[in-house]
Image (cartoon, rainbow, N blue to C red; front, side, top):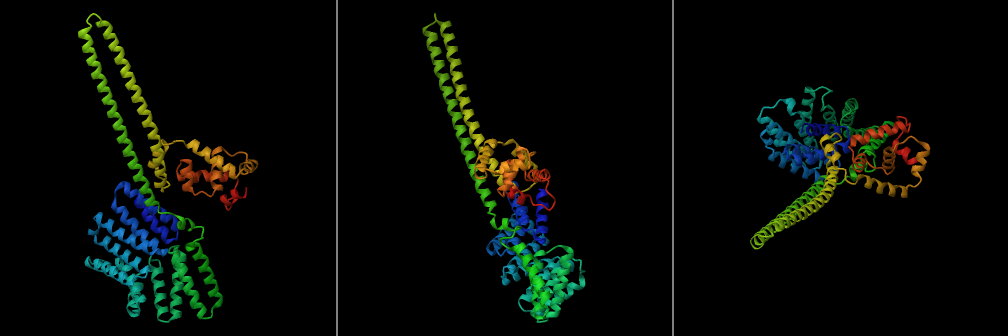
Length: 465
């Protein structure tokens, strides 16, 4: 529980430094974990972060849907009684609506957030983030004097090292652009860029600031500087938001793992219930057969006891033999049923293992690792089939690799094959049946054996063989 809370806080930091794929993974890991824990608090916090992430990539419908889910689970968790939390949620909604250009909804939610803070006499410093957003809304709706008044007041209260300083300078730049005061706007844009460079936060904002500064420098005939800023903005923007960028390619290709996992888990659960019902039914049938057999034997014993007194000893011996045989047959049937249950259990465990692999996102989830370590169904056969197919497609790979590096173990050869196929760390851990952390350690040891330098890329080297 505590670790999930830490991961959610960390996902916010990852968003500020534009590490969106890892932030996305941590948020969805928390959502999946919240289902097993049945904890709505985790869910509303996760959806709060997710709404901002969707807004950054212009996924408007998903962003708004995340806001609705945020309020739903906040209501279920009873946190709306806390005025500060409630204000923060309405602020997040306002921010999301504004980023998706729905200014009327943004203003409505922002007004509620501000009213809530006023109702508990919050300090000016506590209200800075709400007031900053309010000023920006004024700028967007052409109410320049109101915007300038708020932003100027905030500047007097904070230092350049404040967490919100870069945003406030950026908003002042936007304000003066609207007022056609280019030199003032450029000054504030430059201040914001300087702070971002120092704090290494809000990297996404840096892209738009460079673009805006370049536009003003072009108007001022500072062509060389304008060109440099446009180029820097383009390079940084492509690396952060481009669909073909290395960092975000995974994010654009990622599926809705949360829904898929829920569907698979529900399917596994239903199949497990059906198998338990079937096993219980078979057990009842065996008990019925056993009861019938005992009744028949009892009748036979009574009948032959009365009619064949002289043969009592023979009958009793025969009866004991028949009883032993009957019990033996029943035990055989029970053993057969048990064997069938074990086979069905193995299949179920394999399905559960796949479900666990889908659920697992956290690289340090020792509880899941303990479960996985007990479920190792047909892993050797799975790898042999995979390795056979791999050799058919890449028949010269192992031979070339063996000539260059004779000291590689079988597990390291497996890892080379997975790297060759461009598998992600998560996919490697699923196929090899180990944790993502173990895969990372194995990759590190492989680099040392391959004698790669620090700047050498493992994937590029393996693909060159």
